[in-house]
Image (cartoon, rainbow, N blue to C red; front, side, top):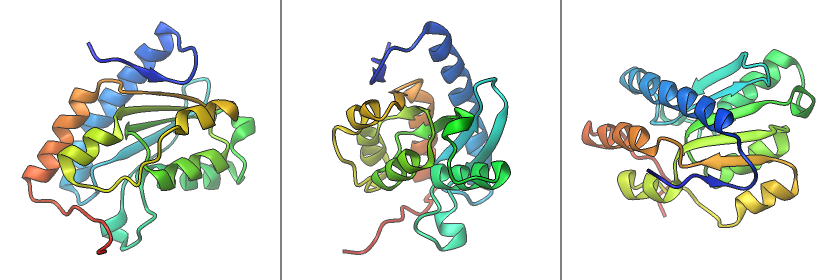
Length: 177
């Protein structure tokens, strides 16, 4: 069994719910990839379990470097709820892989209250070659701001999707340096 990464207390029910959602997202992601999306999918739910938004990574399709799944889902939720401050809605973000450095900033500023992820960034980089721009200590920084973060949930399912993305010869996008 894999070790769950978290910055605070998480109940068995929260973990079970997150695992169910993340496994569902990993399965749906296969279809999204076949339709041209990047290999990440994010969904935002309210505290009652209602789906608010769900979108895939669309960097290549939209020729826009900030169209990551998390950023797309946050934008969609803000449009749907007609606010830039999502905090009063007590929303939860579920994403197939650990958010990159850019997305962590977007999550923090959006007011999302809880973050659950599948594959840790280190494994994303090892499998795909993506540069996650990852900084250490983000979970502690989120905790200081009252944001629960929990990850490494059902990572094997996500690792399989990422490996299939690479094996299919899909584009690994990162800036030329």
